[in-house]
Length: 285
Image (cartoon, rainbow, N blue to C red):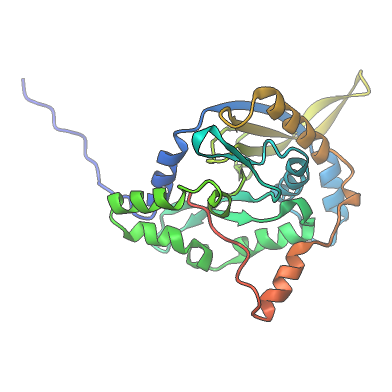
């Protein structure tokens, strides 16, 4: 019998995605449990239609996340050594970005949005637009760490990555305290992932679906599937369910009351005078 030839293939060394591989090795220690719910985006869409600028869906999610986690410090936390949990007063979201390196390969970068508990919709949208409108987002200074890991040998990069995350106190400055990811631009109804934080929020597409109003009236409304993965080492299911319920309430509220001023405008003013470094730092994944 003539031996069969192996299928034709090409080999692609992993370089630009090395930061993701190192991150996944770190995140493998998590013990995730997955929840989800449908969000009625009617009020958010009504607010967006009346606004004088475009707000993305993820901006509404980030705004609600900051307010809700400020009320749930047990979920805005990091597991440290010796079974100690560190809780943080500031909510820092790690937003996953789909980026393309100059050579054409797609990678994931993560941008940090600090102090979400006091940020306005405009503050958050300004940050989202900064990444969306950058000619080459991979070249921004906050992603220097990912570029360095791409150049390092894999073994040395793994050691450097682990050393950077060893301190639980410093981890929010690298990974945030909550992760947010969206695939709503594609026909994805829902998905789950673990972002290396106590909570990871995932947004599917917003699509018209039937809903029941007032107990017996059926209407069509824009619904979005919101997933929540929580690290069972940090908090339990009942607490995570409370967070998800509060997020649902916050996202379905009347958004006209949302503040349009916030702390990030003060940071940007300081930047323009050279008093403060760039507030948008990077995580590893």
